[in-house]
Length: 117
Image (cartoon, rainbow, N blue to C red; front, side, top):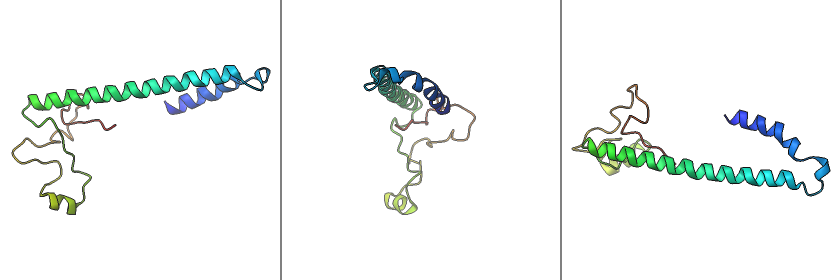
């Protein structure tokens, strides 16, 4: 997708910055500003969507009797885990977090999946 966008920009760019518009190139700058605003809006919409999906997964975990908050300890060092007295992704007295890690299910169906943003 990134390659397609870059290629489209390389095709459209020279059409927006014509020498007839020199030295201010108002048309090209206005189109660039509009596209930057669109990108900013899409980034905010994407972040809100990811947040909504994380909340939905938290509700799914609660409905299954799991904790709504997932504490991911997988990136902790062995020393840090030992200090906490924990093992990666395990919380005592609860269903194992990540039990569906290798199941053939998508991120929308896996209640333990959380999006990072």
